[in-house]
Every structure is written in C-alpha cells, then in structure tokens.
Image 1 (cartoon, rainbow, N blue to C red):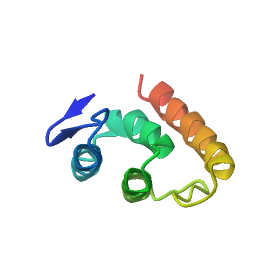
Image 2 (cartoon, helix red, strand yellow):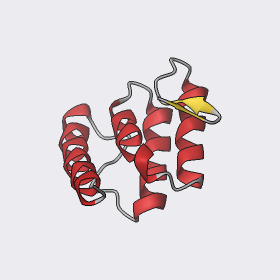
Image 3 (spheres, one colour):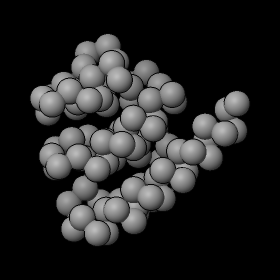
Length: 92
C-alpha cells in the first residue's frame, strides 16, 4: 500500500492524503481500488481527498459525497467498488 509520498494505509491523515494526491497526479489507474478503499475512512479529510482524486481521474462521483451520513456513503462506496472491479477486469 505504499505510493511515493505516503501510504494508503498509514494511520497519519496527511500520509494517506499525500498517497491519494500522488496517485491522482500520476493517474495511477492501479491505485484506484486503494483510493476507493479510502472512501470508507473515519477521517472526513481523507474521504474528501479520495473522492476529489477519483473525480479528477474518472470524471465521476457516482453519487458519493464525503460529508453524507455513513449509510448513504456506504451505498455510493458499493457503486465505486463495482465500478473499480469492472475496470480491473477490463485491463486484464
């Protein structure tokens, strides 16, 4: 889970945000599932960075809003997981 400039799994908020930003800048498509995983973060700033990166990389939000209640975020995260799995299958 390490990406230059931070780790997607780092307990430190700033390290996760840096990993997300670097993946977005590099348009690291292989990082999409890791960014999607950060949509579930307990930290609103990490969730905001993750959806911002996904929107810049894909042009989509799939209805995800980082400040929505957890139950609404969960539905959107499921859509992102399905979308991400479909992209991974196409690239094989």
